[in-house]
Amino acid sequence: MIGGIEKRLISLAGPLSMEASARAIRQLWPFASFENATIGERYSSFADVPFSEVRELFVYRDARAAHLWDIHGANDETANSMIHLLFDPLPTGGSALITIVFDVESQEMGVIVGAVHSALNDPLLSQPALAEAA
Amino acid sequence: MTTIEEAIQDAGYDWLLRGANSPQRLRETIAAVNEYARQRLGDRAPDLSEGALVQMYARHPGKILAFLQLLGGSLTPAVLLMAFRILQGWEIQSVDISQQRQKDFLMRVVLVASEDLGEENEIYESRRIQDFAIFRHIGIMEIDGRPVFDGLYRLKI
Image 1 (cartoon, rainbow over the protein chains, first blue to last red):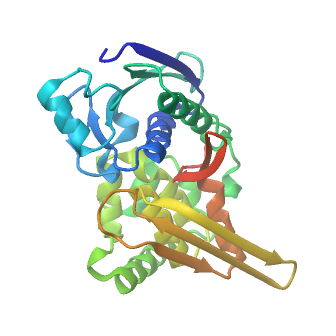
Image 2 (cartoon, one colour):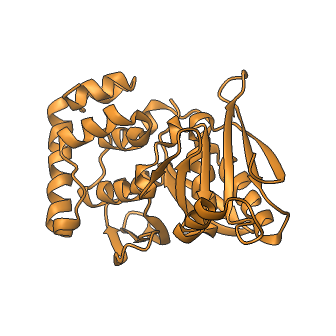
């Protein structure tokens, strides 16, 4: 774990959980950059992130924050400039555990966690629709 | 995997190939949106050819499931392009919809490039009520109590 605070959210969105979470964070961090935390692959654009295949994601506030993390790692300057997202499927049909890791509690982090929670609760992501509806 | 029907079957969306949705009709839809994108966006247009879509699916199946589902609907090329832009990460800045029963329908969506790419906003308009179906696929959330549309998701079937 990178940070000191972990927030765990139950998601019914299954494989869409990571994309929904990342989109919520990006609403607050519009210049966010993304890295597959498992294999260290960085993505030059949001469109390149294979969300349904990523189990752990580093979301940096922006490219500068990613650069500072590369140079300094975790320190006072980089605190709360990167969020570590983890996706763990749960054995019960389609549900998953989303863990949001950051450094210190703050108003911004509170808003981000709330946004992720809201995005994961969108019924579109979890409730079945009729085929005819497509 | 080389054809759109192979990708659709692999995704488990065989129903998209039945009824009015023949593979030929899907190809016509794909060709129409690809041509619309090229005419509208020129060099900035995403490649929406059948080959490119199949390649996208083969590389990361989860990324374009929603778009595959939409190909089986009756959306206009403009709104299909808008859907693809949202998949790419363009964000929905505003949505205006007006409708009067048996009189008219107007939908206007402004998309903004989320990253600092120097892209101008793109405006998508439609007067066809069938295009409203796009909103069945649009994600919703609240940011500190403020409303946001974001994301294009497959319907869970």
